Amino acid sequence: MKEIQPATCACLEKVGPFFGSSKNIDIIRYADVLLWQAEALIQLGQENAAVPLINQLRTRAANSTARLAFSDGTFPSNYRISTYQPGVNCTWTQDYAAQALQYERRMEYGMEGTRFFDLVRWGIAATTLNSYIATESTRYNFLADAQFTSGRDEYLPIPQAEINLTHGLYVQNNGW
Image (cartoon, rainbow, N blue to C red):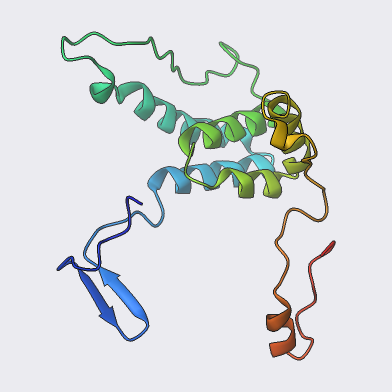
């Protein structure tokens, strides 16, 4: 909703089937670029080169406290965000670096809609989502029969009309 403009707004322009707005939106954040590079370095076995990139985000988060304070200047919580210091507060291996990166993406992009795609890319969607469903199904009855099926639920079905339109060039996704 925060990115939708009312049709009566002077900032909205319709040109043919396209809409344009003068409202600025982030397409790619600098944090995303840093995390992409860190993920690539970790996958290449250069996890030590990823530490400063991840720490750059953690430092920014630790220093971003202005909006977290009450009007009297006190903080409601103690946000303990420190940088990764290999050999001091962590053992920085390739596996640990991958887990740290996954955690950082989870925190950085919480509630922004990218987590599912991260889980699929890392190959942990079924494990993570089924664990979540197992916990939440004890709280909500409508989740009693829910389950994430690996090999099927990573992708949505391709509409039959699109398959027909391409005269069979598109092949239906597995499981659909």
